[in-house]
Length: 294
Ligand SMILES: [Zn+2]
Image (cartoon, rainbow, N blue to C red):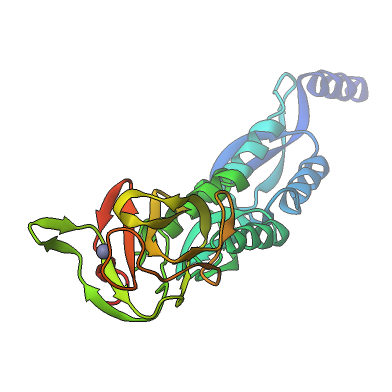
C-alpha cells in the first residue's frame, strides 16, 4: 500500500514539476533554460564569431547555472539569456584607418581597400599637394567607426581634408615658380590702375613652365596680354601667362609643373621681355607673391 502511495505521489509530482537550470548573471536571475549544453554551445559560438570586422568578443559576465525543479509550465528563456550575454559583452573590431598627417580621417575594412584609396589619392593629388597620407591597423569597440565604413565616403572625406588642410596652397593646389628672372613689377596699384599679376623679366625665349598640374584652357592672342596661355588647375584655380614669344601647348593639353608651355617674350602691351603671371581663384586675381616669389 505504501509503495503504491509513493509511486502515486511520485507520478503526481513529476506531472507537475520538471528539472530546469536557473540562469544567473552577476547575481541577477535571467530565467530558466532546459538545456545547459545547448546554451553554452551557442555562447561559445558567439564568442568565436569572426565575421565582418570582428576581431574578438569579450563576454564580461559568464552565466551561472543551477539545476532546479520548476513547475511543469515554466517557459524556456534561452533567447533572453543569450540577449543578456550579447548586451553585456564588448565587441572589438579591426579596421584600417587612413591618416592624413597624424589624424585618422577615414576607416575602411581591409588593408587592400586602404592601399587602394591611398594609391588613388596619390595619383589624384600628384604634384599638387604635399601628401602625408598613410594607413594604420586599429582596434576599436566604437560602433560609429564601423558604421562609417564606406570606401566612397572615405575617399570624399579625404579629398576635402587634403584640400582644406593644405594651407600653403590655393584651394589645395601647390604652385611652383614658372620661370627664372627678376620681379620687374609687383601686384597691385600701378600707374593709376591695378596690376593684376607680377612681371618676371628675363631674356626672350626663357622657358615658362606651368605652375602646377592642370589642363590648358586658352592659348593665343588676347588684347594687351599678347600671346597668352591659361592653365586650369581645378578646384577653381587658374594661372595666366602673358606676353609670350612662343606657345608650345594647345587647348585641352594636360600639363604638369615640368611642362614647358611657352617662351618668354614681349608681345602685347609690353616694353621688354617678361612674363606677366596671374593667379586666379574662382575668377578673382590673387597676389602671386603670397604664394610664389615670397
Ligand atoms: Zn604684368
